[in-house]
Length: 563
Image 1 (spheres, rainbow, N blue to C red):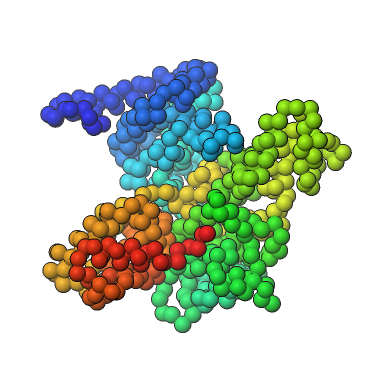
Image 2 (image 1 turned 180 degrees about the horizontal axis):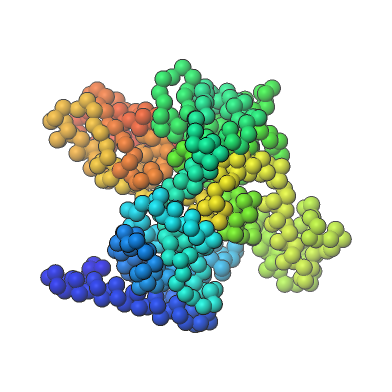
């Protein structure tokens, strides 16, 4: 509230604080009680006429007001009693809707497709992380029909019990909090089926990618949804280590095998057991994977879906290797009201080249469109008659039908078993089916794009094998060097040390990094035991050698293998 205010005495700061709160709540009340046309006009003005820095300041003020009062509101027995607070939340939702308006004006022929005015993560209410997830989930259970409100569409706004619940505003809730509430929902379903008794699903797997994949398929094959819907207990063959570190490493290795990113998996693609068959193809420009429409290993796709669900159940984030359209399709299969019809913009996230070609069809205005573009060379579904020719009158239907064919019918044999595997784990979650959109589902499975906070990692780190003098004089230099890395280098370091570049559920402090001394010598490189989140760091003679060797080590690490 006070940034740039110039206030120095406490009375002036308090006056400004309460003025901002009062004005924000009053604005919320006034705007939300305008007509739909008036709200749309104001939202358009904010989205297209206001400078982005000014809009960002307006959003930040609303976020600060709501964050300042979140915990106090939750502590009150009747959470709906503070109506002024909920009008501030409604005002923030209005700004969120205004922020999304530019997305509706995307054109694929522009230099990069348009996105929201501000990144959606700017609207996250971090103070909700201080609330009790179980209490909020139980409160939501009393109003399961609640939906994220569209403040530009509701005819007549009124505060209701559905509106006055944090999970009703899931687009503003931090991904870690939302994921924990989803876990409560899933665990509740598991306990009901298992009558309170839950045993882990045991997996002992080899490290060789093809052998690991074969073991996973063998374990999952034939198991019912009830048998699959259990947390995993994973060990690597011949190794004693167990626990969350092993689980995390397992997901890294097995997903690499599924996408064909492992050299060993690709080299053995012609094995007799067929397990090396490539399931996905890589879009190098998008750095994302999509279904190989010629792949036929149904059990492998089902297992991949099971693992996406199990990642949530086991509190593990997986690499963000799939385009968002996959999560839209998963929600469609759950009959979620949050799922939307797939469009040309979604196809662009899979194949920008094809999407641009289709955009040229839409942009073409001459009557010889059929002669110029032909019939688009594809297997037409029922929506377009076989003898129809491309024309100005039907070009939109042609293009949409092509999008539907490409993203649905073309990959139906591959997607259906993956979706079935995913539903086997999370399909009974009423929270997932009704309150989560594709953006949120992607973050629940993959985590959010949170900048690496070196200071937070340091606060949660442990040091082993260092003398008291080294802890006072040498290790601070290590943390300073790491903090001076670029964001890309920080991400690469986290991947090097932990095998994942995603932020932990409760933030970077929970990374649990152990920095262990590993000898002395400028010719030694740092190494890591990713299974234990352990960095083996030698003692170097000076800061320059420390920085150079650390950068060399992380640059030569394999990572997840995205090309």
